[in-house]
Image (tube, rainbow, N blue to C red; front, top):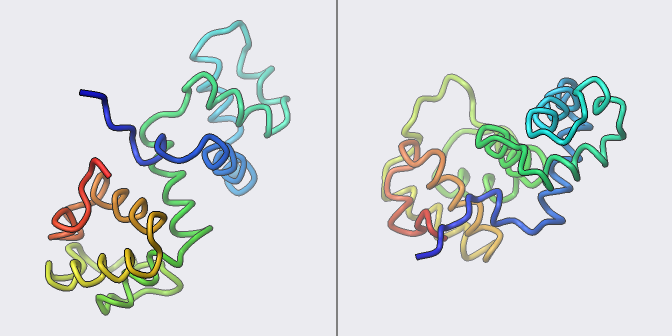
Length: 160
């Protein structure tokens, strides 16, 4: 049986590249971090050399070499669904009645954030309003944070 790609790796190559590029622009230490990841993969370049490369080249090389860690992938998905495209999370949270500000849940709110029945209603609203893109968002939650959203895996599986 074929291995199911992670939510990040199931995005198109163009989408993954644009997320890495966005992270390099938004996060101060990202360029140095990704340069270290590339250097650790080998190929003869030192991190000090790589950091002088343009962000676009670092983004392409980090993806080409598979230099991103699972934590990097999770952070890129958070960038996607909280900062760049919060509409999926906003639909989900609004339908469940979960407090948020433009899709960002207050830090003092404790998981699970809603009862299973509300989570199912929220997931169904995301699918109805956002189709396949919403399904990818929900799958990301199932893979990385199911304990916060009980019952979500009855609507969308980790396999997509």
